[in-house]
Each structure stands twice: as C-alpha cells, then as structure tokens.
Image 1 (cartoon, rainbow, N blue to C red):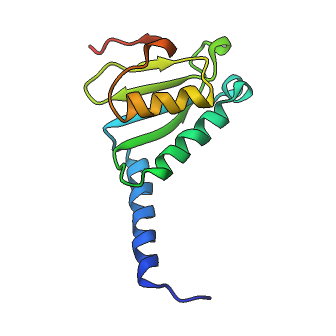
Image 2: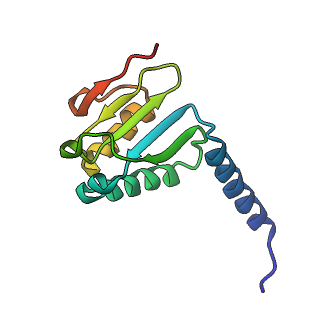
Image 3: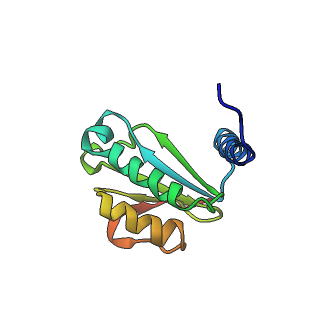
Length: 126
C-alpha cells in the first residue's frame, strides 16, 4: 500500500466535499437529467456524460447539483433535462444532443440565460 502524500489529502478532501454536497442536495443550480428507459434509449447517458465532463473541467464550480430522475412523461421528446436556478422557474429542455447540452450548460447554467430554441416549457413557481 502506498503512502498518502499531502497533495492527495487535498484531492480526497475535495472529492468528499463534493460527495457530501450531492448527498445533501446543496446547490444554487439543479440540473436534472431524465434517465428512465425511454431517456436512456434516446441518448440520456451521453447527455449526462457531457454534463459530468463540463463540471469536471470547471473544478471551481461548487454550486451546481447534477442529478437524475425518471421519465417526465414525454418519451418522444427525450433526451430531456430540467434546469432549476435558485429563485427562478424550472426550464425543461427537450430533443437534446451533445452540442445542445453544451450550449445550455454554457448559457443557462453558467450565465443564467435560457436557451429558448430548445425549451419545451417553463414552470411557474408559486
């Protein structure tokens, strides 16, 4: 067994912090990938992979919670993602591709600007 180096402690600490945040659901932004059978068949795994890569590339991001859920009831519009920014109405994006989700991540998740071309609907918070 190899010895732990000081830089390993920082890395392990950061990984544990992110795991705890995910478990506790702390986050200013929630990105929900709908991954029931229909979503997976339509390509939701590749959408999730792109989102995970975007978050990995931006280690400084600490307030985005990436989670999965089941079917949203619109199988013919999968893959589908819901973006929820704190104090704003949730936005459902449909018919996604890897290129579309990269744009949504950059514009909506990172900069708060809804990408209207890809939305199905927004929900009114009450």
